Length: 209
Image: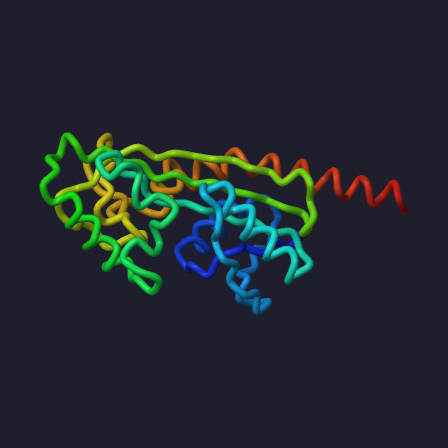
């Protein structure tokens, strides 16, 4: 079984990765197990920040790492909160703090103008200096609901309205969410690519040996 560090301390994300990577014979380990310090997210895009996090996790753990950078993009707010989604209401903001700020910012925006999407960039690296990191991205289209609904999920899920299912993301089961979410879509792309990359690495070791 291949051990892979997840460059995140978010329990919701860790649970989703565990479920979705279970079939790949990959043991998912949180970066907290290695006392990995948080890296400063200085990138200007989701992809740049995911690369920074994956490289940092590889550096301190010595293991392959998987990182994601994801967030909510709201058209009426010129793409905000975007890469600042987790800290939209401040450095130590809770999910509730972020939701309240978002709802306040959209207070005068009618339902038809609340189009939004979750975006996810996933990066997988074999080691700190991996010159060919795997990068996959996914979008989940929806809109921002006018009220908070549902107790599941995390982040902005209670206000992210999924039109075709007539509910918020927080009202979906984990399986239903993973099937259509931005992270689920990106991970589906990445799963086979991870296996191929790991196999090539094993083959190269066999040849060298």
